[in-house]
Image (tube, rainbow, N blue to C red; front, side, top):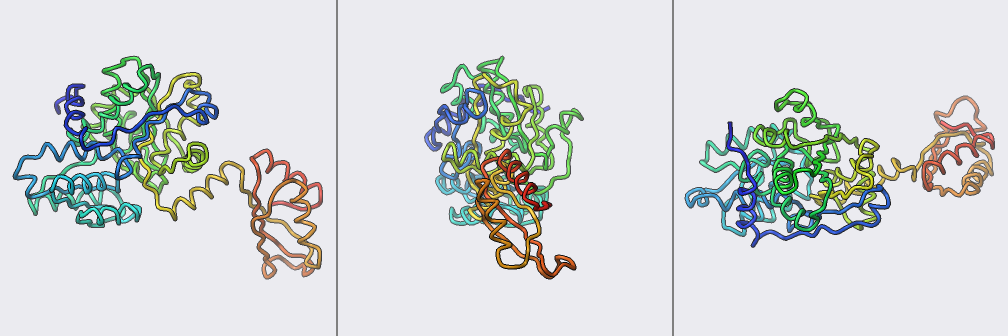
Length: 403
């Protein structure tokens, strides 16, 4: 059995890294409190220099290397944020860093790692593919491998966030923590439960990569198939063995969130908190918005907003997806007369319902035998789902069939 993680380990890590890590704030959020019915605080670790909490564990691990290891350098597999943390702090500490990233890693993370001086190797379609190559490189080149979520040095570093949260919000009732490999969960839960044993620990994972819930059900780390997800930083097929052994007895609840919920959470944080958060970082809010978290209403809840590294091209798509999930963008197909005034009549009905036409696309070639009418696909901007239902009812009342 590995040595257990203690609050003393986390305090030592905090003292070790504090000169090189931003002490991120944990302010209350009035709009998110109004939205969710909980008293919400947001731990803004996305404000770290590289945009994520991963700097904490990376710096702690690097500072614990001996002199020979520092000269040779380190290697790690990462979907992005661990790589960024190692690259940045490796540069600050003069330690060579090689990172192996899956091919799906966001372009912004790949380019930033290179700009920070790391050697970047793109390998495979999954984190596991990247991990295997990192193991080979470590053995071949004599580099120290720093695992992104199952290294005790890294887990202790991530746990420092828990110390800071309970300094700022000592009467917190619950922490909502995103979970991929469970390193952050293990570290923060250890610190939080040591300082406040009755605090609730809610772990959040994407439905596309549900290793934690599968592992808890099996009683051991369990490999699951992963699918593409907005929460790419949580797209891990199996939680770490050490991380799981630490986290499993400390977790009170696991919430699984889907892609619509993640997109909507990104949108809510952008609009209400003016904060750009990647899918993994938005997972805690997605969980709090879920009906399954009704138990947290009226409680003092801290959301760990841990990452803000999202490609701008992806952000555009996520916003669109979130607007659809929120009922603020709707697409329908109908038929209109293919004579002057046909489109105008449809547009008049939409305008009378208070919606705005975003796009109309004709389909004359494949719209059937009636040459005097045509199919159109219409995208409209609406206020919410109730507005969509009202518009659909109005269109039907005016004789437009909707599909």
